[in-house]
Amino acid sequence: MRILVTGATGVVGTEVVARLRAAAGAPTRTVVRAARRAADDELVCWRIGEQPAPRALAGHWDVIVHAAASTRWTLSRTEAARAQRRAAARGDRPGGPRTHLVQVSTAYVGGVRNAEDLRGDEFEGYRNGYEWSKAVCEEVARTEHRGPLTLVRPPLIVGRRHSGEIARFSGPFTLFQALVSGLAAVVVGDPGGYTEISPVDEVANAITAAVLGTPPATPHTEVIAAGRGSLTLDSLLDIVCGTINECRADRGVAPIERPPLVSVDSWNRFFLPLSNQYLSPFQGQAVRLLAMFQSYTSMSEPFEPTWTVADPGAVLAASVRNWAACKPRLALAVPAPWTLFAPAG
Ligand SMILES: NC(=O)c1ccc[n+]([C@@H]2O[C@H](COP(=O)([O-])OP(=O)(O)OC[C@H]3O[C@@H](n4cnc5c(N)ncnc54)[C@H](OP(=O)(O)O)[C@@H]3O)[C@@H](O)[C@H]2O)c1
Image (cartoon, rainbow, N blue to C red; front, top):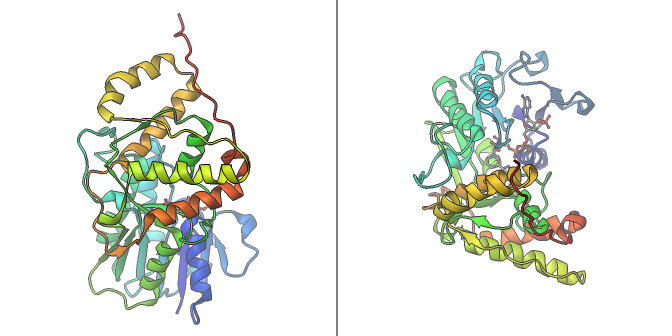
């Protein structure tokens, strides 16, 4: 079986490649962007969308796992459009009508959209440029890939179920840091709103099952989520702050306080105008970044899983413990309270 994995250095790609290499009879070639990593025979350097596919990737592929993506939530409209154009330029892609394309997308291109949350219309109702570009990538795969197609849609990805290990601390981990540092002076959202997370090893399990299983006769979408068993924003904050405080207590460090929850309505009406006026540029930027989590952590409905994540609370606690063990300086920091600045002029 000839398998190609793009995005092999990322959070998902690292886990998937390790799993496929461990599975007997699954030799895997991987695409990386950075030339310095191409010493390994299995690695091929390719800047997707910027260069044609290298000759090393010619020939038939049984399966292509496409996990490469620009994953920054703060992509501008121009950057997101560029990411879309890259996805649309399928002419130079390896793979043909007999190739099973397993495309890693995101659960947030589906689900219910709340009218009253903090999303604007800049990205056609999607939360940000990243999500918008992922929706278009799905559409391109559906309309242009001629072979079997599996779309894998994970929610926010955290570390492995039992150890919390993960290739890099991105996404939800920035929230942990913001809670300890004091930057998250308030959390905006609905305490009963749903928050979907998945451990990275279960995302890799779902992808590996698609790769090694029978290719679907019609396009299949795998939604990885806890559904009705998912966390709420309230339980998420309890688990994150509670676990951080257990780690701090073990080292004899004072606990952090759980920040108050502010509804979206109060935030938009009172806090946002004040924050624009009185916060430093750095604090203002942090507020805008944290606000991006609101619609992810306060969904009015959870997703409907096809691949169910059990006990997401235990998964989250394992990730917090691993993060605190790997980043003690951040996890044991003394929170800095917010200070207000007088408006200029
Ligand atoms: N992490 C999450 O919470 C999450 C949640 C839902 C869905 N997903 C989806 O899961 C997939 C993998 O995400 P991830 O978290 O593993 O992302 P990641 O850690 O940011 O890694 C992205 C990978 O894509 C590569 N890449 C980006 N642009 C490329 C280009 N033009 N050419 C070649 N390679 C390129 C990166 O290479 P470099 O190392 O060279 O930068 C890296 O290997 C994505 O489709 C993402 O949308 C992730």
